[in-house]
Length: 220
Image 1: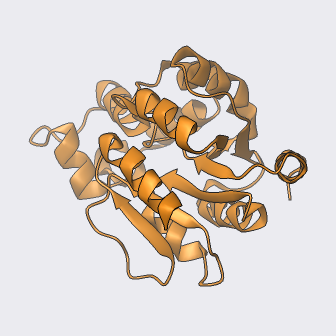
Image 2: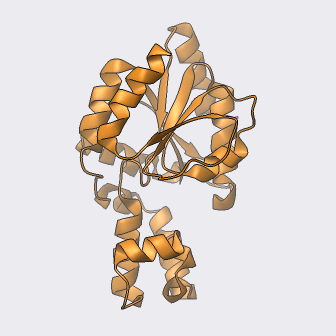
C-alpha cells in the first residue's frame, strides 16, 4: 500500500474524521472531451458522429478506430504524463460548486484517481484553480499498468474504509473489483444504469443530484 494512503488513513484515524473520496477524470474534469477534441484535430475522426455520439458508440477514446495508430497512442501516453495538460482540462459544469456544498455536509478527505503519481502537481494546480476543497491527491503508482488502475483503486477504498465511507466516481467498472465484503458506498455519477451488485451503489444522474443523495445517505 502506498505511503500516501497509509498516511491519509493514520491522519483520519487520529483526528476521528470520516468522509468521502472523489474521482477526478470525467467526474470533476471533462477529460474525455479534451482528449477526443485533441485527437480529432490531430488525427481526424468519424465525420458522421458528434463527440457525444462517438463516446456513446466507443466509450473509451482508444477504442475509436481513427485513434488506434501508433502516433495517436503516443499522444495519449504523452497526455497521461503531462502536468501541463492536466491543468488545461475543462471543468464539468458546477462540479466545483456542488463539491463545495458536499464538503460542508461531509468532509472531502481525498481525491482518488488512476492518474499516475507523476501528474499530482498538475492535478493539484487544477483543483486549486477551480476552488475545490483542499485534500490530498492519491494517485496510482506510475509503474502500475493503466489496465490495473480500477483494481488498485478498489484495494485502496477497502483499506481506507470506514474512515473513507465511499467515493463519487463515474466508472461503473470499479464495482467489479469490490466484493460484497466492502461496506462503503459508491455514488455512481452520470450513469443511467447501475450494474447488478450486492454493493451499496447510489445512482447520481448529474452534479445537482449529488448533494441531496449524500444527505439521504448520511441519514440512513
